[in-house]
Image (cartoon, rainbow, N blue to C red; front, side, top):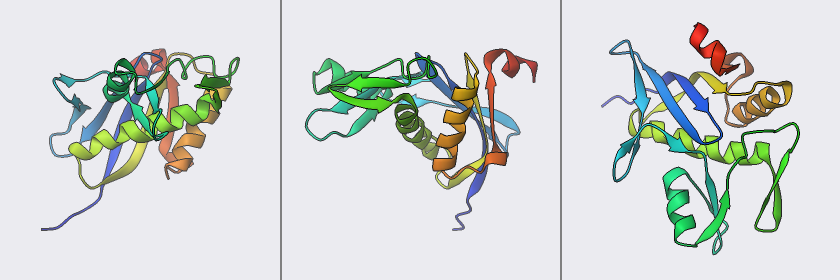
Length: 165
């Protein structure tokens, strides 16, 4: 059985309250929505992190909410907005940059793609945000670079621009 790495074209809608991901399916020539599969299939993943008290490990999305509700970790929200005005967030006494938190979230959430495409890498990544400014673009491009995405394989745009294409 041949295992070929697929270069995926990924759309990543990064909002302050949720994230949606999609990939271009080369076989069907259509867009696949990436779903969180848990008790239900959800196409919107909450933009929330939880740092567990016992281990310091990070959870994101629905697992984060579950741990927060069970009082097993510190809740982290609103790390996508106002990156330029409020660049840091306090997490249970420790200070993190919003860029660090976005990196943790994006890196973990992109792992969902593996359920659809077990052998993949980013061919092109388009990240859409509500408010686009220089700081946000730099943060996202830095995160993408950390994830191994080359600078010419990423685009950052606002929501309005995403409807123009």
